[in-house]
Length: 134
Image 1 (cartoon, rainbow, N blue to C red):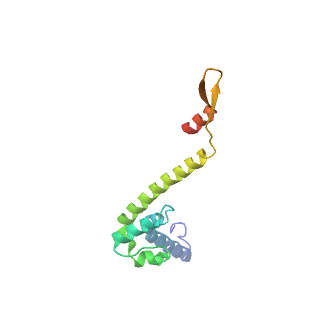
Image 2: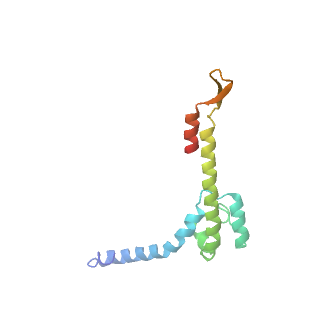
Image 3: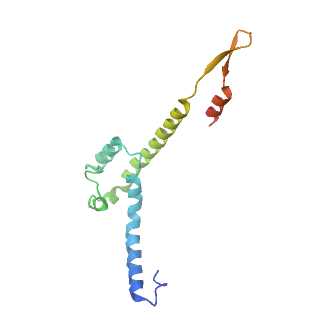
């Protein structure tokens, strides 16, 4: 950035300052991403609070980026990331199960007589087989 503005000292200074601020912010990104995991439930916040030794709750002790710094969450990145990763995996499973439940709700198993053999067959088995394959 500073090379592009070599002949413009004010722009060069601004570009270097912005680059420095971005470089300082980069280490915070993984923990912010983890804490924004949509799969985080109360049980996960309880676990993190217990492991960290202080209450960590969105809207209570965690309201802004300042709180991330004041609570020194970067010092606990590994613990936080571990819980958040677990929450993400649980969320993926929950989402997949919800999708399956919704996909299978309208499915109806109809059993009909097969000709005059006294046997029965499953009607619409192709649709059900396709859902099983998916």
